[in-house]
Amino acid sequence: MLIKVNEVTLFYQKYGSGNPLIMLHGNGETHEIFNRSISLLQEYFTVYAIDFRDHGNSSKVSELHYEDHAKDIYEFINQLNIKNSIYYGFSDGGIVGLMLASEYPNLFSKLIVSGPNINPKGLRICSRLMMKLIYIIKKSQKVKMMLQEPNISLPDLSKIKVPTYITGGSFDVITKKHLCLIHENVKNSILKIFKYHTHTNYIVDSDIIGKYIIEVCK
Image 1 (cartoon, rainbow, N blue to C red):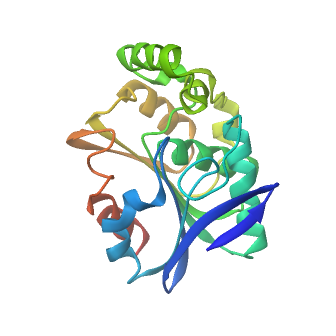
Image 2 (cartoon, rainbow, N blue to C red):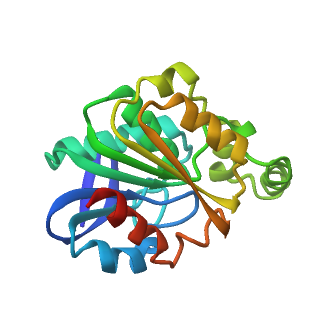
Image 3 (cartoon, one colour):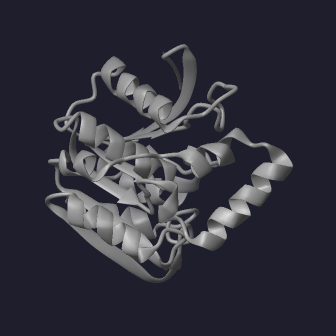
């Protein structure tokens, strides 16, 4: 399905029935990374799996910013009149979830974010160096965004009111110290570290995160 928001077109798929669950992927990915989890989640929720602008089948753009992603998803929710939704975001999707829940405290009923960061220093140094090298070679706007953004403050995090679940892998590219910082500044939050997992492998083409979402939401 296609929907026009903020002068771009977003592609999304809708699955199942029940309480609404919005799912957003990470940088350079599409909603299809959640296919294995969606096969479980659609039995419990109406799942809206969205491609960010300049990803998948959504509109291409010349520049990327997390603020624009957040505005797109807010408009998506308003246009479809989705009420009391659960939000799940992985990586960039998690960043956008934190931004939306901070700015609009009543937008979601629950917030679940995997591997988010509130500034680029949340990434391990080796990951940032690799990104800088990739940007020098490819000049990718997706990589540039990760090197320069987001810039979410601790007071911003303190504005989040909904029950929040933060996850990471024990071998994540986001440091455990940074995930703990987010947890400590989001009231009513729980932090879970998936042992022996990386940033992606309990989420991408995996049903592990789907089972976790069901566990904390049912």
